[in-house]
Length: 169
Ligand code: RP5
Image (cartoon, rainbow, N blue to C red; front, side, top):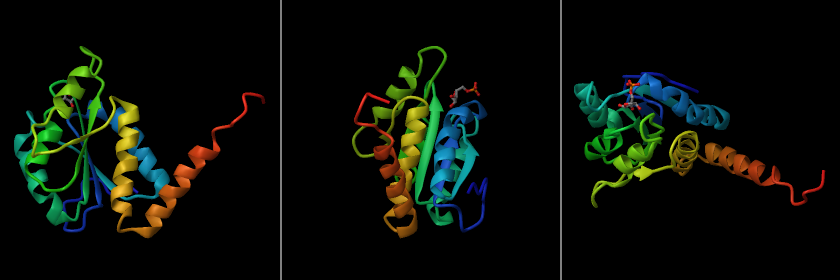
């Protein structure tokens, strides 16, 4: 369901961006979940400090291209989600990528501590955060896509059914 790097007027409703290609193994966990749910998405590398012009262009054009929700993953001094949120009214879900130096605590605090007025919905550090951002993005898009919402409900039901009540085999 990936519609990678679409620059036309009809982008996929979910955009997954990340500060570096090195973030992709983490963010791919979310992309895989969206594939499982049959939700269309695009992927892009957008670095707040290495490609600032791309950041501005992406952020300011996302809504007009048809994007409904943005998932932004970054590590370290992770200003990407907050910068994107400053330039779009779309919901931005931030994924703190696990860093080598501080295990992602730096990423988490950089993303979660937005001053009041410019929110970033911040998820857990690493793969769990990428996965939950994807589920949350699907639930947002699913508000106006009944078929996607039905697939999301079925996914949630499968989680429930996978948990046995008994500790016996
Ligand atoms: C951040 O710096 C990226 O989001 C990535 O998590 C981190 C390291 O980037 P690379 O040095 O691997 O490109 O901007």
